[in-house]
Every structure is written in structure tokens, then in C-alpha cells.
Image 1 (cartoon, rainbow, N blue to C red):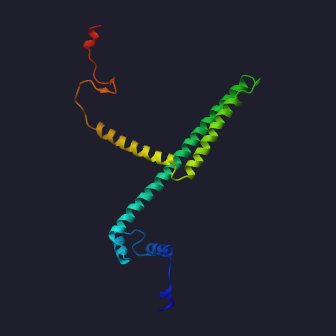
Image 2: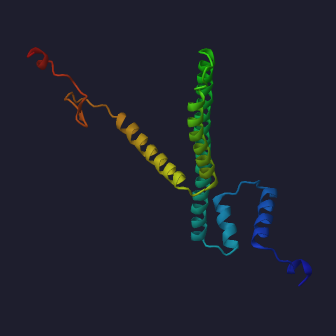
Image 3: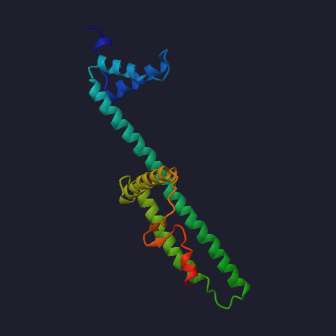
Length: 185
């Protein structure tokens, strides 16, 4: 056994070397699922293990995409709040100066809202740093529910009803109007 054959690699090193070799191969960086299964078989990995790994990879990839979207959402909400804070408080300070600066009353809403802004900033920082925060889990659940509801609403609105009877939704009359009631008044 020569020195080349005795060389050993850690799992991460082997994975990195194989990834680079795959990218340099004639087939290009894309690997078909058939080729993936063939490579796994050569390495002694069962097709079931590959399928589990594919599912786990897809879940992790979706989780990362959701996480990035959540961070964008949290930052966007904070920037929106900060923008309102700045514009409205500048407006209040302008009114304070325009009406005479006997007393600088604009400081009170500025300080009160500023405390709220500080809490919002802290909450955003905490939410962004903690990848498994309750807020993130709730956000994912709300997004999933919204997606399901919009899908149900879209599929139900595509069916046209020819029913002319009054519709009642949570006790509110929404459908046709009975003109006979107007005649009795």
C-alpha cells in the first residue's frame, strides 16, 4: 500500500473534495437523481437513506428560506414603525415651533413613543438572533394558515352559484333583498 492509498480524509473533507470533483466533471455541476442514487449505491448508502436525506435537506432548505423571509418581515415592520415615528414626531416638533416654543410639549410624545421604539428594536433583535423563537414558529403557522385559507377561498370563488336565496354569514344578511318587506311599511 503506497502513501497515496493510506491517506485518509474526514467526512467533511471527503464531502468537499467530492463536491469540487463533481463540479469539475464533464457533466457539470448538476447531478441527476439517478446519478445521485448510483453514487450513493457505490458508497454503500441505501436508496431509503437517500430519500430520507432528500426530505431532510428539503425541510432544512425550506426552513432557511422561511427564516430569511421572517427576518425580512421583522426588519420591514421595524423600518415601517421607525419611519412613522420619525415623520410624525418631526411634524409634531414643527407644530410646536410654529405655534411658539413657550413650552416644548412635543418632547412628551417623542419620549413616550421612543420608549415603544426601543422595545420594538429589542424585540426585533431578539427575534432575529433566536432562530427557534416562539415568534418565528407562530409566524410560520400563521403563514401556513393564510396560505391554506387563500387556496380554499380561491377554489371556492371559482364556482359560480345560481342560488338566489338569501345568504347568512355569521348572522349578517348578505344575499338578495326581499322587496315585499318594503311594501308593508
